[in-house]
Image (cartoon, rainbow, N blue to C red; front, side, top):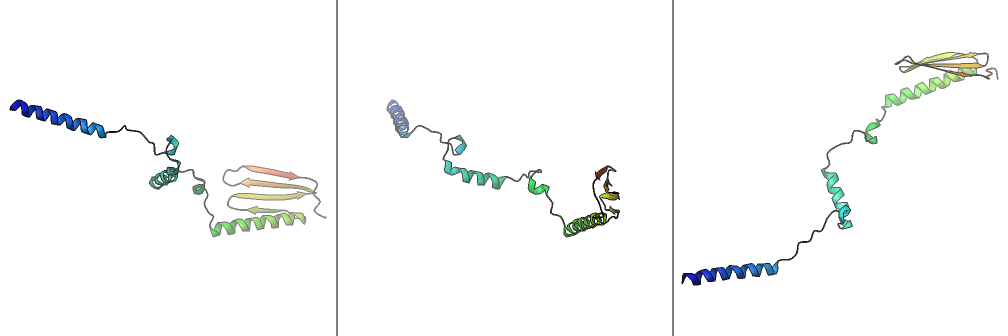
Amino acid sequence: MKSKIATAITLGSCVVLVGTSAFATELVYEPRNPNFGGNPLNGNYLISNAQSQDDHKDPDRPEDLYKQPSALDRFTDSLETRLLNQLLTDVGNGNSGELITDDFIVQIVDNDGVLTVLVTDRATGDTSEIVVSGLNPTN
């Protein structure tokens, strides 16, 4: 009797194993990423998920490098430009002049038609000299 029960259990387990192996199929790898052969329609979904999870900021992004100047900075730049234009107009009338700002010193001298512009950087002390000859301020 014990041998019949053991045979029945063995036979039953063999039938279960054979029956389940009949339903098994081959596993096939299908990539999701289009870079590795997946469906190209998955690309937008994958990139949007990656970008939504990215919390690192690039310190060298061009958007972060430019700072919008304040209204006071724009006004100061406009005023300095206007004063330089007025200084050059005065040189055209035969006058010499000087403009001192926070960043530089501009000295303009007209010696008998030879215009000398001396620009001094106040932060470093470097100077640049521009000499233009052939000017006639009396015209």
